[in-house]
Image (cartoon, rainbow, N blue to C red; front, side):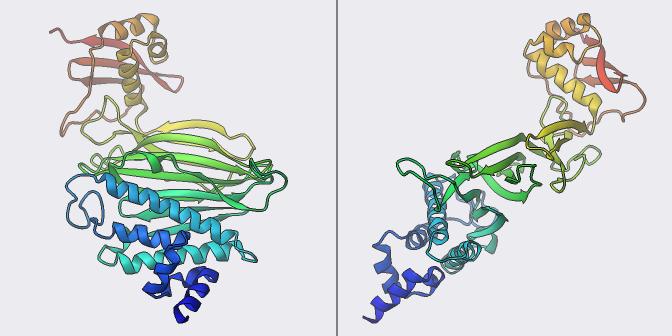
Amino acid sequence: MKCLTCCQIGITLLSAWVWLTPQCRGQQAMSGEPLPKFEATITKLGPASPDDCGWDGPSPGEFSGDSAKLENDLFGDVDAAIVQALNAPGSNPKTAIGQALESMRALSERINKAWPPKRRFHYELLDIDPAFVVTYHIRSRSTWSAFGVAAEASWPNKGSNAKWAQVGEDEFRWQQVDSDQEMEVHPLERGPSRQARFLAKSSHISCGDGITGLDYSAWEWNPASIGSLEQLIGRKGAASRGDYPEYGPVGPLETNGSKIGLPYCEWSAVDLDVDALLCSIDTYDISGDAVRFLGTRTNRPDLETVAKAIQYADDRDYRAVLAFSASPTVARRLVALMPPSITANINGGSYPPLRGNHETIDIGGLHFALEKRNGLWIVLRFTVDPD
């Protein structure tokens, strides 16, 4: 009876789950409740290496599909525990979600204590009333989930709705696990309709060479009808490793106010090594209900012209090449003579500094004479060394 009483308390008080005796937790696990399922899943993960790259412990040798499946199950357990807490009778939503997350964090602290702290389950909670966005981190995985209350019940139910639900998650949760992930979310200024908005920034760090892929996505939660989480902005790119500091990022991430800036780099034919050389920042106006793209600023616009000319010429896309050419004759020459798979890849090399309105860029046997006209760089002449 003593154990039965303990378990009843554990059902009532979500955060008290951590302190229940193993015997009581065993009885609770029979019910399929989210917290016992979370504990069972994270216990199965316990023997795994702290991360998939071997940076914080013994190398796993190869990426484990079993670990990825358990992590995906774990994220589902966390989602279910949060929804259960938010829908508990008489609960304060922010208090309830915080208690549920703290219970799971404490479980991981105990069960995964052999792992470095940053590899155990931890989280960040973003309150963008009337929604919550939570980032989860475990081992090499990071993901986010959004929670809200739609105005109307979903099929097969009808009528008004008061139930919280998980209303969205990042796309990377279900992709192949082949990197070390980082995730962060930021609140964004609301438009005239006052809908909740946030920006998610995802980083995917290659285990082999530290190359980092970036993904930005801005979202807006609209609780009308059955609710919708709409994507407002999407931008993919890379992060600079800092191998060539004279190039590097154009500016920092800017998420405050009516204008935001998203910095990123891009791999291209002008890269000097494995690091992405061309870096830009995209600016958006989010003051209205419709987000407007304002423009892009790039660290080396002359090299960007060369990179785009090579890219589109390799695709034999004359119309696209023409936008970067001084004349149709130059564009046709670029398309006709561009060899496939061009990359600079000059280890330890460099390009001349940007000065004046004329440039000559040499990549292997390719020579681009550039001119700046009306603020834009274009290819004035293009020649190829004879074989």
